[in-house]
Figure 1 (cartoon, one colour):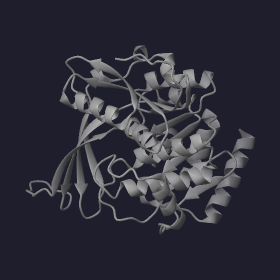
Figure 2 (tube, one colour):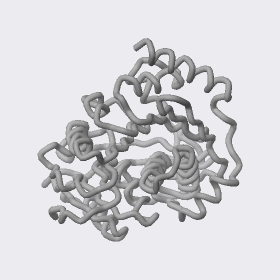
Figure 3 (tube, one colour):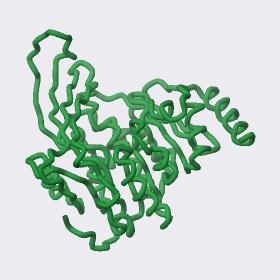
Length: 331
């Protein structure tokens, strides 16, 4: 493993990487059936790893810290990061397999089902990290998998006033401790309910915002785009209609877009618009990094692309904001 050399970077990412085997099928299989596959592709993936690659392709300087085994999949991950020009710092777990996933993609809709395997020996641990991985960056991106290590990294960033963006998709042990150091949690649609027990995002997002003192909390809504709460108002960005080939990695590229816009100092509305468009375009090719489009193409789609129906009406958002602000006063 190389030591960080103190070189300033725009964004540092700490989290999982994966080698994905993408299997495209005519439709999702039923039990006790046989089916001819359309294609099989082995591609790089992983939440933070893919988001960091997107940021690098868009011109940001990047640093990635991840853990792999000493197998061919781990060597594949290393080569991919080197090819992308990402400053990567690898922790190797001897004798352990690297993370791998089998991704079944329904050709008719592009929707995917992920079957994943992760050996406990490749979990990032606090002792794997160095403060210099985090310092000298303008932003830190983490995921919610190895929460103890991510919480340490986020605390280091917090102490240096480095904004922290987090990609949360599931409720892993210790995630509440991590949330306390995250400025911009951007979650899956179901994550807020898993934390709060409240299924209505218009209630659960403000509740998390109040409890964990985030600067902003957002949730991705799949084809319907994204919703965010900044403590005063809801911001809704409808999704974009594209020809979907494979939805693998859409959330990862959304998070890359969010970090990119944050580094550029854009208003949140513009960040959400760019992130939604980047995620949509990535769905038009196979793999988690299938089509990380150029910023100009992303901006063009965001400005003029056909939108999906809004997940919430303006009246819904306005009324929910009033209720959230009233609850904030009472808390």
